[in-house]
Image (tube, rainbow, N blue to C red; front, side):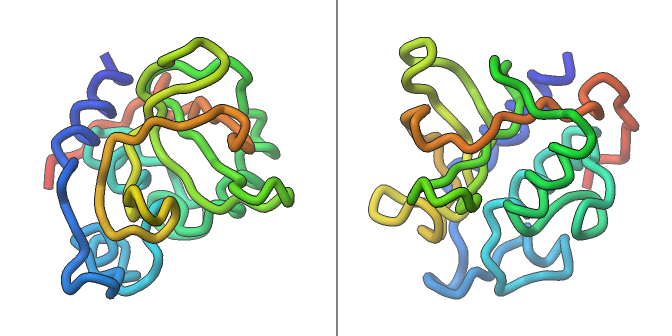
Length: 162
């Protein structure tokens, strides 16, 4: 089941931290050739790739590094959804200013339509968008800019695990 594979890969990464702290240096950034840059979107791309469902070239090879670029792409390809399923991508707008600030992978509703859990990279309890760790976070739907159900979940291209 593709969605479960995405969740399994994401869950295996919980607890991974950038090193040194505050550097944005991670294995995800190394994989993307963007080590040292903010990495929440790179983390999501890495998870999809390693689950065998690469997102395609959005603003980097095999995925996206910029949350807004991801949203713009998925709006054009009609992949945004209103009712997310496990394994879908979530994009956040913390300031409600119309610009995507952060991203993660939807896990499950805690309270249908109100709060949910999401696997996220580069987060922490003290810094939602640049916290330096992979975590399973509880989130409020009011900060969601979009949910995305990537078409690749229906068309896997199995890759060798790295």
